[in-house]
Figure 1 (cartoon, rainbow over the protein chains, first blue to last red):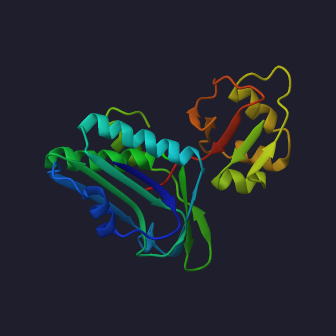
Figure 2 (tube, chains in turn blue, brown; figure 1 turned 120 degrees about the vertical axis):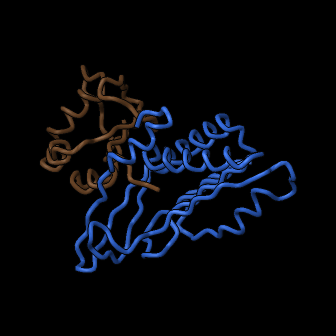
Length: 154
Length: 83
């Protein structure tokens, strides 16, 4: 089962894990990654972060990423949930779950999914600092390098 | 055709979406960008900011040499920063 959602509301890791594994006994392990809003950026405190995306293309990109990982690691299911809108420090941003018969596939697929998502899914972050100024987050070379190691061009 | 702008490109152009008629003779993304830059000071600033601009044609990533027609949806945005 593949679940893909882009939404403003928060997600519950336990509920999503239960939904992914419900009614089946062929899964040997589930890898998970939860991205969270940090309260600092470049040494400065932030008060909030706003996530913008490209409706339509985002869902297409996430479906492509999920299908790619499912084929590559023979996943038994995966979940990609990304929040958008205004998020406060400590809030969840993104959830990745990958279910497989064995742990290596589950863990590798989870890392692949979040690396891929960070460089290929059309989301943009804007940070608001405590002094009221705002700045768009710049893409990182290290993120492109993380994707490149999987043999995917950023 | 529909042109979409996201993140700081949207802020500089001053709109998130515009419908334009593709001028005759423009057949690729690079040609479209050169023409869009002439539309307003905001457009000019968006595309000459000295930072990388990415493009999608019909919701797939595209390069400057990608062919376009008047029926396409073209989006311009900065390198993505989700996750």
